Image (cartoon, rainbow, N blue to C red):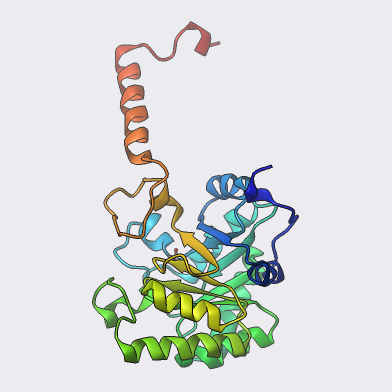
Length: 272
Ligand code: KIV
């Protein structure tokens, strides 16, 4: 058996905390549809994130802001129908939890009830603490997200590394402690210096899952379409490409077009 499928029948939020305690790294990838989720789950991934990156990857928007709660529920339901083992975490989309805790709770309840997901993820620290508390009080597990938080892209102005300056790094460290104290079961830390990320991971007992945050954290997450090389125009330094599917799929499609045009497809064995 590969290291991927090791021992656990079903991954829960508690499994992740236990993994951190044992020093076992956590693997996480995105999925937005049934077929991809089936493959990722079967490979033995620990956590599937139905990320609001679906807004970019699936819908072609420039940012994550336009995706709606209904669209996230649609993606999450498709993923849930595919999985046997992974923990499925769903992003609360922009505009569904920032205004007040009751709206945040209603949004999280819709995701859990209508998709069957296991947890929600929310971007931000102190500013959204009351909403996180309200959701946790209803028994819904929450994963935090600090550092580069793409829903705030228009405030940041760029997708460059966050928390390089002392003041932002200090706020991030405080926010991580606050998220742990409030009851989040894990935190995604996106695009921050590796040294800071390692420090944060050491300072809390809940898992820190990094993306562009170096190796000193408790797990890693990537956008599946990026690591498969399907989105070949996106090339950040942190991204490791495991395939060049853009090239391989293009080759398959051009071959198919050629076969149809020349009459090579279908052949005698491929007809009734
Ligand atoms: O939406 C997403 O895919 C994410 C990951 C990049 C962590 O939030």
